[in-house]
Image 1 (spheres, rainbow, N blue to C red):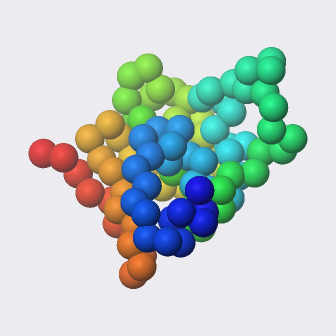
Image 2 (spheres, rainbow, N blue to C red):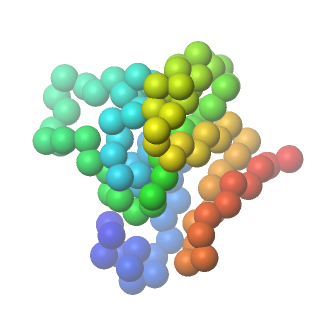
Length: 100
């Protein structure tokens, strides 16, 4: 995937697709437990961004767990977004956008 992105391909990730772009996915396990047949050896993400997307922030049914993740992982550069927001990343940085 990284090779294709380097060639200029566009990537769109919703929820889990955004989470895997971070350096690690360990912070999200409280929201979505690993299945018993989890095949990845570690919790490494794709490391495409230097922050950690927290989707569904304060939205049902994830209100309590997203609050808990924000508290327990306050040392991470978390970027919480609700279900009406997205993150646009380009060569100049990133910005949160909101659907009206």
